[in-house]
Length: 192
Image 1: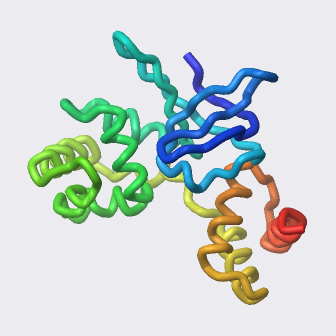
Image 2: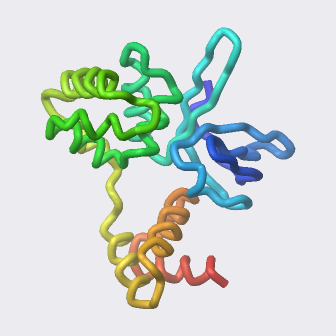
């Protein structure tokens, strides 16, 4: 079982990325939002392998929390990996938890491939599973240093989308900077 994968992105598509983890071996990994990844970037993903009679697929996530939610979604009857990935593409973890805690199943039906009935079933299952508490403590929030770095980048003239994309890429690459200033320096290095 492959639980974590680190390597260089060699190609991307609408549904997956290919990571060269071992020299010359590229692994196809389905991810929630492949458009956020760039060829030649280093990445570390937490993975879940789905084995079917005629298919073995690897699904990758930026955090352990994303992987846990994916596995929880797979435990719902008639929710497969494709639908679970679609939900994680449409919602941030915080938005998904908020949708479940506020009792808004209609929001789930806006996800491609999920109708009103399936959305209600998913909502019911997750609200029962998370009834005592929404697993917010497991969710890896954006550290405040990244929020500060985002503000600094906006002051430097970057658009909000550029700033968030660059900061997310840094986090996916496993950046260990602990202050906003260090993060901004990393961003400036990457843009040269």
